[in-house]
Figure 1 (cartoon, rainbow, N blue to C red):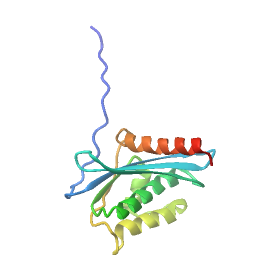
Figure 2: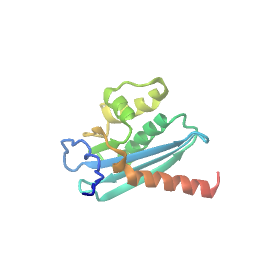
Figure 3: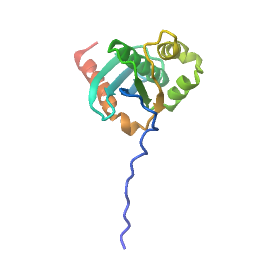
Figure 4: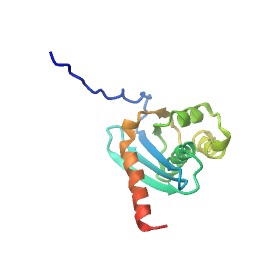
Length: 160
């Protein structure tokens, strides 16, 4: 009898008690050690996965992959503020950054960027009235990853 091997998908992201209308933000970042450059990408969707907006950015002089992950969250929140989004669910494939933001513990290297994120989310003058953050598996951030990679390819082809 032949053996059947099935590949299973990871479980869906942890569910959050979503308030309507909540925008979902999936984000991704990658870091190039040789150049110290980071590719940042984020996608804003509604609750049925219709793309509402997206963004990507290249950052120079980024010290580490963790810094790239923190920068992508800050940039996504900044764009959400610009778009007047008040209810947003941040989802990241970086467990370390999700934990650092949620616990409000800041590694020395990330202190400044995580403090910016904390102000954007938790200050009394925050634009956001609903802003949970959750870890999701990388399989769910593929669209943001494509944006970040396209951004880097454009940068590399256009010259410094």
